[in-house]
Image (cartoon, rainbow, N blue to C red):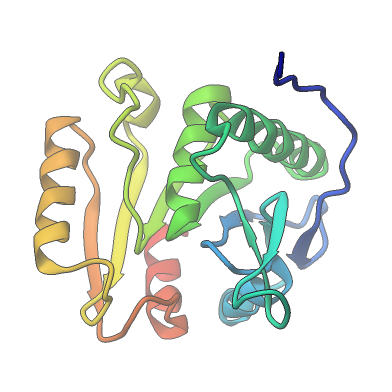
Length: 217
């Protein structure tokens, strides 16, 4: 008889940073990439907001794969539908470990901005509603919120927080219909997000990021 089993193992995770943690840091960004990206390339988008008082952390999904067949470009992913609950558990433990490691090196009043791009949006929210990290601003960029989470139950967690949703006007994944459904989902769950658009496609537009940075810091 065939039986399936699981066992926790030690795994080497990858992440990239801009800046050095310390008492001089006023702003801490934790940015989760989208499907098929690597942290070391994804974080380059954030060099436009880099400054001496800002520390930027980009974790990388725990699974890597060839994005175009059996060789060539390599990307990372946060989870798939296969054993999804275990994958959520694994990456949530990973994100909390990173978060706690760096938050201990920063001032107690550092402003924390959580950022998710595409698949990284759901990744952030699943982690947030499991471990409830302290944060000041949440930016969801060209993604969506998981519809299986109970946001109303944890309404207090989002009260008096700075919430933003951003997408490009030519984003093939965020059509006008999907944008409308997303806004309805936000309203249904009483999540007060500010909506921003930019002229562009499915990407983190650096100029749009700079404009938004000036609103959240």
